[in-house]
Image 1 (cartoon, rainbow, N blue to C red):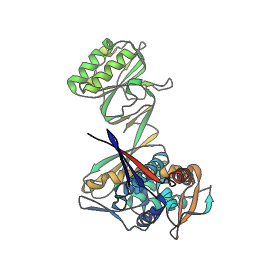
Image 2 (cartoon, rainbow, N blue to C red):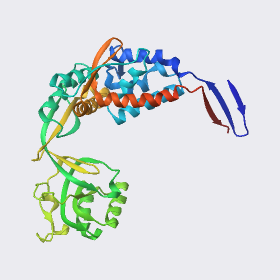
Image 3 (cartoon, helix red, strand yellow):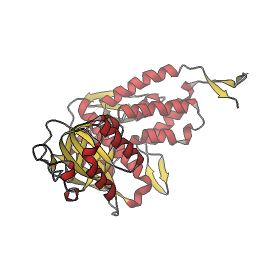
Image 4 (cartoon, rainbow, N blue to C red):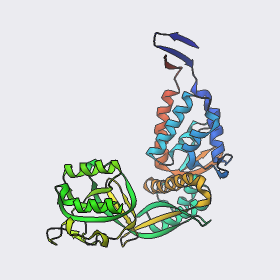
Length: 374
């Protein structure tokens, strides 16, 4: 090791050979594919599956002393999963000493192909059964959420849901709202805060969040609502609805508009229904348990499994995304460690792109670390 001391920092140069670490990656992949590793959270034991690729890579002790190599590996696997769920484990399989062999590809996929793909990523348990059931009953037209249940059986409930398309105000673009709320509809543009004064006072006094549907809202009003939102004093979330939105959808007891002659100050908010699940993001609102063509899927996670709820949620979200990937691009049969698996073809493509970038850093001969002196 060479060390050069400067006035304010030191430079350490460490020789590296990333190619020598493939043995560890091969062992890591073997542990995941063959089910040889487990998670243990608060005495709750859960067998590792390929869908846990990013969690296992970041938490396994097998890589803890590899420094830069470990950080680079986590970054690549995370990038794969972030761009295309299911590609992280394929990237790791490509890094093994045995590599990855492609056998055949199917564009027209069948029910059994979907099941085989999910069996590889999830194993053959309750999550697999429920995700497949949701897909074949409801396709992709659903809103997904999670709740705790006192029951011991993991499952899901289905209710109808209404989707409202539009866009959140620029001041609220980075804010996702999810809670029981009332919905107020204004068929027009909101120009001043004074127009909303009675509604704001009602929200403060009753401590109830309000989703404010409108045709347009001035920057002054939205900025004022944002300041109050950040302070926690007032929770009013403005959303500009599309022109084709049906005002008679039933989410608002009364509609503020020039045609009805109603103003916000004239409506009785005590008559408005509080919806138990309203989820808002930058381009849509999902209202559960109301008449609509969408399905609200609520996965019920047993409270006895609280320690592993985060893993269960990750697996469900990953699985729903993997099903979409398989339907989009078809599937490819791959072989690794003497076993054959079906994976979405698009996942294979993303893993190949990541491997090309990885090959560039494998040629690194040293790592320079700058350490600032106090």
